[in-house]
Image 1 (cartoon, rainbow, N blue to C red):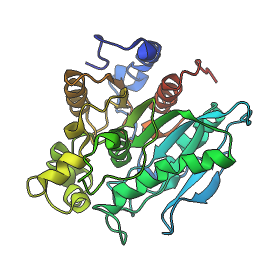
Image 2 (cartoon, rainbow, N blue to C red):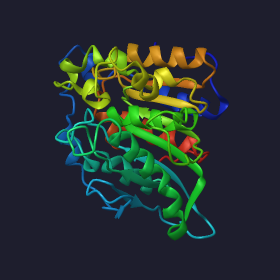
Image 3 (cartoon, rainbow, N blue to C red):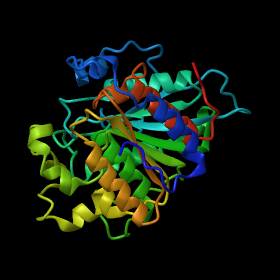
Amino acid sequence: MLIPTAGLRCALAALLLSASRLIAPSTASAQGTAAPRLMRAGDVDTVPLRETGIRIAYGRDSLQFGELRLPAGATSTHRAPIAIVIHGGCWYSPYASVRNSAPLADALAQHGVATWNVEYRRYNNPGGGWTGTFRDVADGADYVRMLAKQYPLDTTRIVLAGHSAGGHLALWLASRRSLERSSPLFGGTPLPVRGVVSVGGIADLREFYGRERNTCGNPAVESLLGGTPDSVPARLRDASPIERLPLGVPTVHIAGDRDFIAPVAVREAYVTAAKARGDSAHVVTIVGDGHFEAMTPYKAAGRAVIDAIRRLLDLPPDHR
């Protein structure tokens, strides 16, 4: 149940083997004692950072910026692969910011991967929602071309990584190139990517709409789309990753078995649909971890995320 065993891409086989070693009950669970408290968004925000990154604007709005972090050894002759990192927070600004994804971005830079940690307008920000939230992450991702003119970045090796609502946006970014020209979300020139690591990501907006009040506590999906899924079907088709299949790139869906925002069954349902449409897609589930452990580099789920990103970038295992 925890890791699919059929049809694995060889590029991800080592990742899944490594992850399977992590998927084991905690000592407390095995002994029948109470499981430890799950991490919350605020806990991730307090994880110490080694580097704050270089803050660079990709647009004119105060929320249109990213944080660039470069790994040691990146030079004009040894350009670094890139992970474009997108934070979550139910597409709602009070819940999360780039600080919530900074620990992952910082850790990746320590493991040989340049990171572009993108901030964007949420639905409650002026200009956010439909279509500003989507346009922001698209413009932020496209801005990597500009960054590569000044910094040693390898634009042929890019992975998208997003957490929760940011996982939705990362999966959506991978689908941009197949948008119809008539779509309000069409625009820009997407860079090719090696794959997507969805960290407790929301891959099916219609499915999540039925659970949003118990998870986000607010009308998240209809606020993002400007209407309920049934009332704006064209927007749903353009915006929901499961509606945009096939994405045409590998996807890895990582979270703990105690993630109740992106439950195992929901992630597996997306992977089943993706494989049926010809995509390579896999679930990695870490027993005992929840939704925010996967964004915390010193947790098992967080280490699995780093490993997945490195392997999609064809980097050798890093056992630090």
